[in-house]
Amino acid sequence: MSRVGESSIGISGLACSFDRSTGIVRFSSGGVSVNHALPSGISCEVSAEHIQLSAESNAMSMLLGLHRSLLNNIACGLRKKFQRRLLLNGVGYKAEVRGRYLILYLGYTHNIKYFIFETVSITAVKPTELLIESSDKHVLGLVVSDLCSLRKYDPYKGKGIFPSDVVMPRKEAKKK
Image (cartoon, rainbow, N blue to C red; front, side):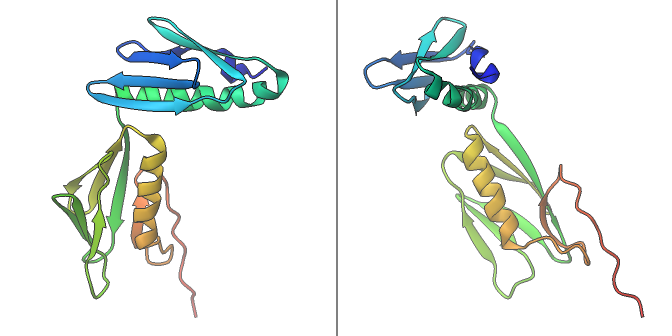
């Protein structure tokens, strides 16, 4: 049995329901609702303050911790959004938000227009710093990796787009 899967999930402040026939757990908070489908071998007990998952067989106990973590991420994201900060480091690098688009100036001959999804909010704290928020941790990671791949970090020049919580190493240039 998974030790992670045994612990309960706190759902205070959220409305939660479980449909036994389809195996779908539905969370709702402030007009936003999120569904998560459980496999047929995992059952769910919902009370007013927490959710408890249990596996019906040994084969399903391997997936118990995974689905418990996914449900916990959904509950945490609905209570308080997940955040990541990105830094743009380089001469002339800057970003600005116009409506549903993020306009990036990254030293290319053209500007890059990046469409912002409905589940994600991006704000330009400074011209060289972006704050990305989402209630879905998976979508947040995809957006951050997309933006970082537009101009990868160069360790010799120290230029590029990278998360603020990651220490990026600098390399020394070749000496003659």
